[in-house]
Length: 199
Image (cartoon, rainbow, N blue to C red; front, side):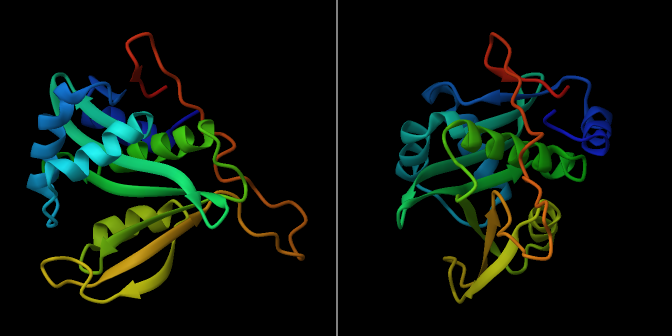
């Protein structure tokens, strides 16, 4: 199950037509660029988008309401210091569709895709978010991400950022004999059109 019951209720309340679609081709790039440019403070060149989308197309997803792109996540997964490391480069949800579980659904979908691509218990997923973006911080912290460090003047607008980190399996605690796997129940149902539909 990709989304828990509360996430599912929030998503379904937002739109009966909502679906998560895997990135398919360069034809979707204008949708992604328009949404991210409108919702995030950091400007990205077309080369940045292509870097992620061409190398890791299976780790990018669009939240679609009919033909409208209302959310997007762009990620990568590669080796870093001898282990797999996931990276969430961009996450944006159109402002009039926020607080409906769409961002959470996109992150859970991307995390499940990273797991399917080989991320294991030793893997970590990282990202940066502006310290002024309390909504994003809350979303990620609710999913188990933790603040790793403060990065001063990280963004072009001069704002500081937090580096957030999620261990796909928490480090073993000797006082907890049964640690839980954060992604054990996240499966990614994909129909023939490569669309991921909330269960």
